Image (cartoon, rainbow, N blue to C red; front, side):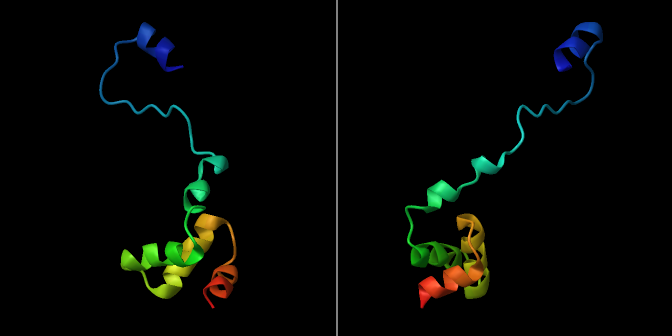
Length: 74
């Protein structure tokens, strides 16, 4: 590993260490559960997204289909 490499050679240049990669269970889905669907979509619209793109982003965050978001907004 990286430690062994530094012990046997002089480190030179730049190095990038990845300590742990992203995991599926690290998504922000839990953070959005406090928002209603309407609030979630509005959050994205307030950031400049179109209604369609905001619904698509909210659906992705929540792990549901865009049509489910659309039904909630009716």
